[in-house]
Length: 436
Image 1 (spheres, helix red, strand yellow):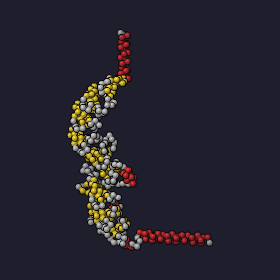
Image 2 (image 1 turned 90 degrees about the vertical axis):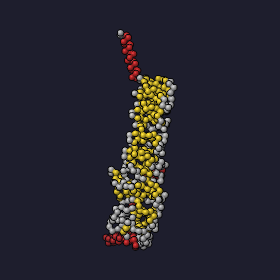
Image 3 (image 1 turned 180 degrees about the vertical axis):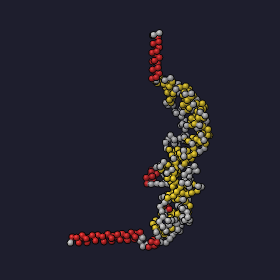
């Protein structure tokens, strides 16, 4: 009797689970296709914006015929290679005019199936809440990044610099899930690292962008770019360096490096301000920027006007006194921000102005000049330290003393070497006198 009950219960359990399985299958079919038998004639479909995107494909991973349909199965659009999800009332399309092309061009249609933005782009993204979407276009043998509005107007243009070797047809390849070209990504393989012209964001980056008061630096395995507070990728991620250190950057500009050449990016907007085509650059100061080209330095202002012509072999950034040390053919001096020479180029070395004074070196000895180029302390000393606007420490023959700008002196210290030497000399004199 117990065996019969156990067996009977086991049968009931099997029947119960079979019935549950059939119920779930029926429920699943009904939930996806409630009274929509017309969907069964398509191999794939999904719902977006209250409408249906339906597909027919001949085999797995073949290019499908894709249509936009209403809830009753009425076809609203032409046939496309793919149709993406709706955002801001527009859905991405991949045109199907020429199935011989490996990849189709991208555009947008509205909920009525009407083409609003012609398929002229190599790749596009979804529209954001502010009605802007990124779009990549191939032109003049390179890919460029645009931002378009819902009317198809190219409101922002991020031209790929001519000196940039990336983002060209060479090394470019496209990946996407089979039959879903609207999800494609255009990539460039640079020495094993994948670069993207389009912005690739996640929740963390979006949060950091919102918190930042200026453009944010993005990085990808040793490459750098900049994106602004509106999530516009102002400089695509291809730079070898974007340096924020104030030894190299200043006055709202970050030094950038690409292919061992240098330029500057705006810290505020994230846009390339000075192209990376120079052998070297120095920290901007007093609206003056030193650039090196062809082995010679020249100076421009932020409006890119040349204020000091290409001439010098060596330069330093302008100090707050408006003075910069320069060198030509192995001799050094000082100039002002207009390029006027205030100290002749006669020294072996000059140093940055500090507290209105400039330290100079000649024949291994040090001296000091003022902003007018006048010699304040002759270059005859072993060492000089500028303390402040009035005082210096000078060292000569092992003796250090403090001197002010008026020439008043005070002995600071005597080196131990000099003390030992004087003791030895005194001892020798004593011995000489007493044992003569």
